[in-house]
Image 1 (cartoon, rainbow, N blue to C red):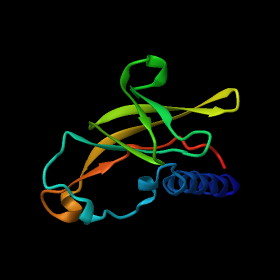
Image 2 (spheres, rainbow, N blue to C red; image 1 turned 45 degrees about the horizontal axis):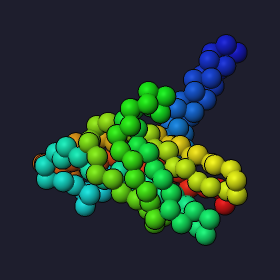
Image 3 (spheres, helix red, strand yellow; image 1 turned 45 degrees about the vertical axis):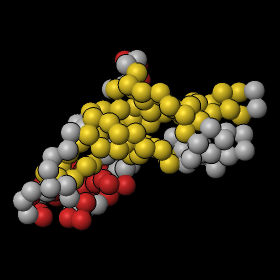
Image 4 (tube, rainbow, N blue to C red; image 1 turned 180 degrees about the vertical axis):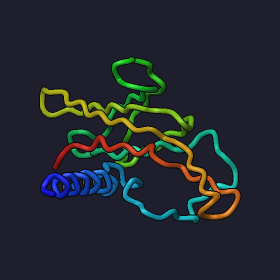
Length: 146
């Protein structure tokens, strides 16, 4: 009897951990429980904007960005640019994993911030009617901590 109750409690705890992972995801789009049909594309795009949030301040009025296709360790540079606003967009290939490196200055020191994400296409035909494609991911936070 005791083993059965313990087994049930452990199973319930494991289920709670699995379900709560959906609500503690890192990306804002991962928190959504419902689909916003207003975000639909009527066709399956092959590219969309990566969105990069960063810090622009007196010491860093421009921030060099390096975009890697895949992991940083693989070293495959996809694009390099310089941001002058706190939100930067780069039109990029869909269904790919990207890593972004932002290079900041702090006095004599160099600070590098990294973030990685997968930008993919979600087929929301069932939720919104046909055709409906929604871009998921592709949002990066390389801002300095406040």
